[in-house]
Length: 286
Length: 301
Image 1 (cartoon, rainbow over the protein chains, first blue to last red):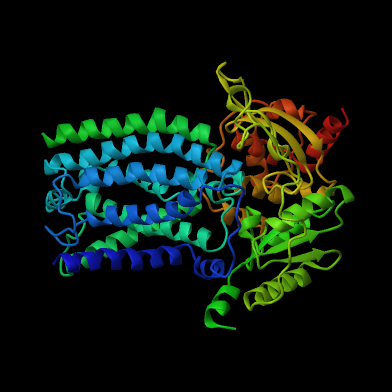
Image 2: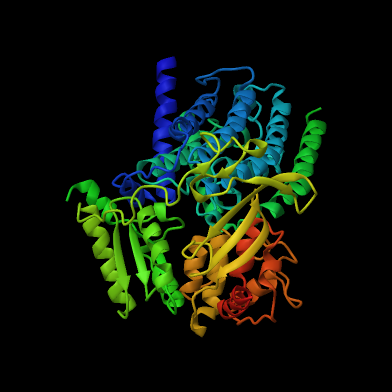
């Protein structure tokens, strides 16, 4: 059974990454990158430069492994699945920072620091939102959270949860309004010195993370594998694909404010809102 | 040509443009076409498009830019030809590159342009663990933070004339603390551009690209609506205020296809104290003709 679940996680990640590339219509450009060479910068941190996309991919895989593919069935059946996911989120910030640190150049480093500054106030609402979803289940296990949605999905019971988590999803996948690491004003930031296969791998890792974060959102807010007629994994895939499409659409169609404005919005509006959401969910769960 | 190479050749052509005097509007319109893609960094491009006649002074910068493109790469000069002809030439050059066509060697030797004058093996041997000028770049030394009086590293750099986020030809001497601009001085004003560069659609598109809305920028240049959310709302109110109108108002006017004029302004004062993204937005929110006039005044002073 474990072997089958490992296979399911890897196949979901692979197929989902392909779907994310299709959503961005990036497939020919991605193939073209592999025909191009990598340029060396002056005195780069080679180890971290090569490891950053690998960490990102590994975090996407670990994050996906706590997601139940059928009711009661996840690769990592942990009583604290949400905490495992939360640690993945925190390590993404480190990974993106290392990606910007490694080339030893100004624009990547600005992107790295900027992302670290923006990601912190994103992590906090993320945790509040996930803990709020854990309250009705009275457990931090994602399997229990799925079970708690048999009557009513969390997206209806806690209407603020999914919109707030979509902001987190955009930040974790460096997309559109939350892409403070790789913006155009700093010549694509942490990727500014990357070319060829290295650039393509970083993009693929971001696409894989979109699968992972969407699958988690589908589990926490849309009942994950719950649904009539079709088998559990199919429902999970359908819901994940829908959330991936929604996140990709938001990434392409919402403007990105300067970091100062976004920081203000995150600390002054989003953080109190997520706290309010947690308080209301707590009272309702009593 | 292998199957994979054929797929690669069908990708939008990744172009980095070195835009010369008088060619900004044409180049921006050309690169908004669906088969072409304007790269945000030279590392992401395969074709260097040199539009127009560059002044002699920009030749060393062009050579450096050329060597920043990853190989295989090709340079295309765009003189008086029409846009359709140039698009065909770009697409043809890209197909040839994907099929393993000719590549271009580096123009400059792969060696530091200045001698090592650092103290210690990494330049860490001087005052405050920093010293000398390794390879012609002075080490960052601490200075008063212009916002809250902390002592932070000040990093000096010259940016331009082909930096993708600056107007073509502009060279800025900048002193930064992190991504906050402490001091800005105009080393070279932007290249002269005809009034066509002030067209509302082109001005709006420049801001939209900086706001992360590449597709919306293309749509606006194509004469359509941007089709994006929270455009003016994303701009902080009051940013880049000149004579009563701020950046948000100028963007709104351009999106409504109205031309914008601004009274005389002091460019270094507008940029000093601004965060990097805000500073780039401010520069893109000034109509090129007015920006060139102001920058020339500063460069002469």
